[in-house]
Length: 181
Image (cartoon, rainbow, N blue to C red; front, side, top):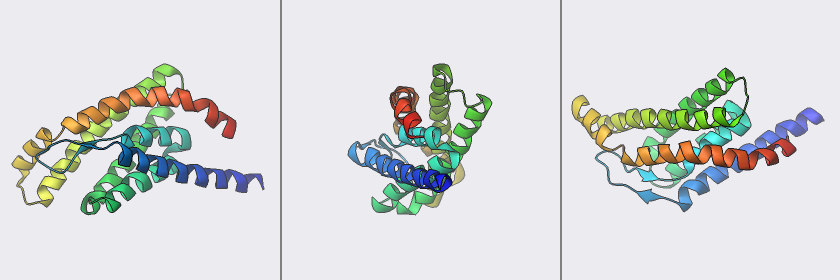
């Protein structure tokens, strides 16, 4: 019975995080002009990292894929939602690997490092996604590379926000998650 309750709790927390991620994007969405795609500033990325930290790579990644991918599908980004899900997979792998290196020790310096490295990962994956989006709309490779680079301001802001918000919210929410689990 205890195993079933734990599984149910993981499913409930995954659904909760998926909803929170969706709302975190939907509530605060500030569009930024770009050469490729339609980027905007939002809270989805830090919430994705928190989901991965609290639920693990598989369940947190599932929550982020549902929240971020679902937002894309329901808000005019359906054509590229598969790229968003790929970004989530990469982020889940990276954050999980970092935590394994830290032996799941969540001292402040480790969580700050996770936030910073997650922000850097987001910069890289968003750049690659923008290159693919440029190619999808008919650009040749070199112009797609340049346009993707010129489209990074929103991602840079989101990445900085991730580096700052993740440690703050992690340590605010950690006591509640310890009680739940």
